[in-house]
Image (tube, rainbow, N blue to C red; front, top):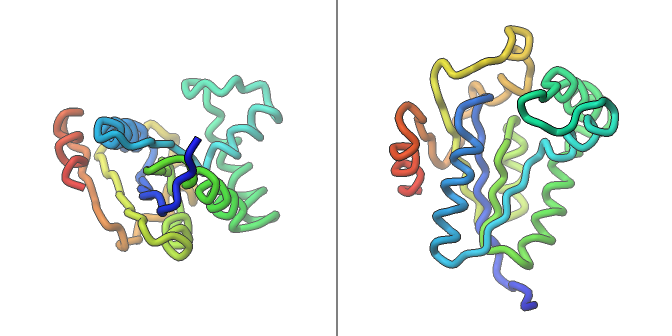
Length: 178
């Protein structure tokens, strides 16, 4: 196995729940793989989800996702009482390891400005993409008002903003311009 010596391209996706981040991530992954690139997808929330599975009886299924538990665990407990940079620091460590093996690293779930900015401070080959989509939010009013859904509302420092307002083919066309 040959280790890579150049810095991986890092693509950070952000957007509200149900905006199309996961679909966008798969489209971008497929595009780079078709070019012969090795791609890995990471999530800040993977750590939260692992904790939630061990704390509760959740099986990891997205359809039964305990969103309130995930929000409380990730923000109220970990970010606010343990370490505000907990997930960012772990992801930076992950990127340092995975960049030895992958050409492209996609982070599929930035929810806070520092989850974009801190990665850009450490790595030079970073692109941020914000996905927007109207009227697809299935969250409760309480969930919609949680900081994980609102922290990026006034953030404007994205490299790209993609309006996901059409078909998957239209989304793919927009993402291919990146």
